[in-house]
Image (cartoon, rainbow, N blue to C red; front, side, top):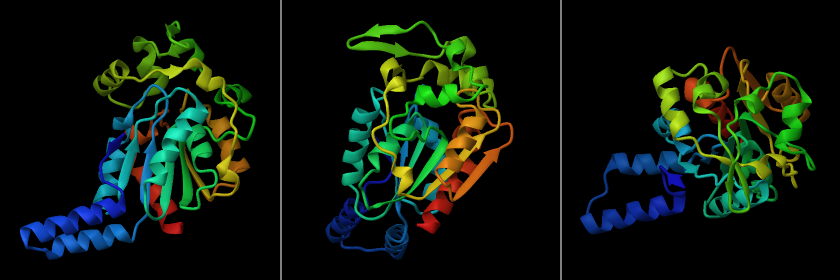
Length: 270
C-alpha cells in the first residue's frame, strides 16, 4: 500500500508529538491539520495492468487541495480477497471516506464498501460496477467494442492459476492510447498482472445500491466499452457522470484534472 498521507488520527497524533518534542507549533501546520480535518480521506484502488503510481497526477491535485489520500496496492488476485484487503485499510481510517476504483478496482470497491457507514461516496474511474452475481468478464462482453482479449499475452501459469498481462507492443494502443509513447512504454514494463480467475469471479455485493456513486471514463476506452460504462452508471443512478472525449482506459493518467474534479465533487456532496 502506498500511503501519501496517514489516516487522520495518526497524522494529528504525529503532529502533536512533533510539537511537544520540538517545543513549537507553527500556524501553517495547524492550518494544514484543520483543513485536512474538514475533508474526507480519499482511498484510491488501482485496477489490472496498473499500479498505485497510475494515480500520481490525481494524487498531486488532491494533496494540493488538502485531502488526506491513501493509494492501496490492489493484489489483483480475486474480488473477495482483494476487497478484504481494502476493507482492512478502510477500517484503519477515522472519519468519512471517498472510495475510488479504476477498472477492475471498481469491482473491488463495490464489495469493500458494503456495510461501512464511513464510505460516503464511490467514484468509478473507467471502472466496473457489477451487480451481485456479475463478473467483470460478464460486463465486458455485454456490449461490443472491447478489444482486451486480442491484446493479452498467453497466460502465465502461477501457483493456483494463471496470470494475465497485456502484450507490451499492444499496450499503448489498447490501454493508454492518449498517453505519451515513452510513458506508456514504461507503464507496459511495470504493469501488474491480474489473476485470470479474478475477471470471472462473481460479485457478492454491490455497494453502489446504497452509497452515492460518480462515474468518469473516456469515450475511446478499449478495455471497457463506453456503452458498458454508460449502462453501469445509469443502472447505479450515478449522481454525476462525465465522459472525457477521446480518453483511453487510463483516463486518470491522461486527464488527472477531470478525475480529481469528480472526486472533489463526490467529497463536497458527501
